[in-house]
Image: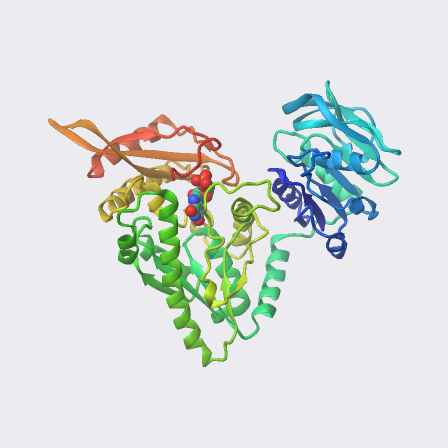
Length: 515
Ligand code: XMP
């Protein structure tokens, strides 16, 4: 295990993800964890992440400098470098020139951390402080035109860089991280999908014992992979619940049930509560309010079904009630903050929406994984591409893609438009290339002409984005031909829409969804 201590950088999770890419297990812990917990993990290496603070700030995250004396190799990144310098007796000051973005780094000393790297490397920097005086025993290993970029104390086995090796803009970043993990820490590449599946199955089986588990299915990758994984562990002691919340995509309720039962062999209870949800949504226009209404209603429906299931299970000896959730790492990051620095943008994701009074114990088998890792696991579990490659779809469904009030008519209209978008994207072979592609129904009417008739109807926006994890995204440069087909099909096939626009906003500053 490589332990990554999180000082609040937006890139911390990326470090974990990069390291896993060469099949080494890594965990992210808040920098405030007690030293004992780090020791208990018996790490082969420790990485100190970047962070938004300055070491001399009063609110600098309090971490135990004892991690530097465990005798385990340490790699400091950005803030991590400053932390090392500050706590081992050097001096960190605000930099004359702050460095953000691209920089060129020259390697000036031979160190195993840089083995195999060229003399000059392109890196991604983001810092406002610099190390002025180094602690005893440290040497400089790299610099930019303006500042120090790397230090090392090989006797103490501590290395640090001022740039971010984990971001894609740092070209040789992977090699650097690999040098650290494999050569300096001596990790072995044994964290593979098979290993993950095996250990998860064993753990879940032991946890659940002769209890019973339920799982809310959404039809998406995450909950399906979580369900299949748990079903491998406990078989028919898992019951899945799939709810029609009235804002699913066209024919989705029927299609998902079929796939889950026939292809994945899951034990599914399907609840058609569409009308109930739409009644509750009547008159609601505020995005956060929509999420709340749907979330609360979902809990109510789910709660009812869960009670029935557990009641029925009682006679077969199930006493302990478990809830399986397909929570992913990015969900955890965006919805809560590790220790403050990363903020909640929307009250979204499936985290936190649990029926509390049921006292269910949670099983979250994917909690440490990124989306691409979940897909890898799903593939290894033999799940069909149709599910594995599915684009993410928000829990509140089309409700957050219908701006203004959600009415049955508008849901039907958007379902038609959305199906055309997805259909054309698939036909063009772009479905897997883009992270998400969908239609949004705007509360804007405009004038048009159709045949000889003047029309005054709705506007639909098409959104397609490329992204690695949904946290940042860029609008997809769809070919004009594809846009043309989508537009003309929507206007001619969907009654009530007479204008189509394409959204060319990246995230940030936009978000992927419109609400
Ligand atoms: P945003 O719009 O915040 O979306 O850029 C990032 C990713 O999250 C999905 N999303 C949601 N997922 N419940 C969910 O389960 C929600 O309320 C929600 N809002 C956004 C969105 O589709 C994108 O993949």
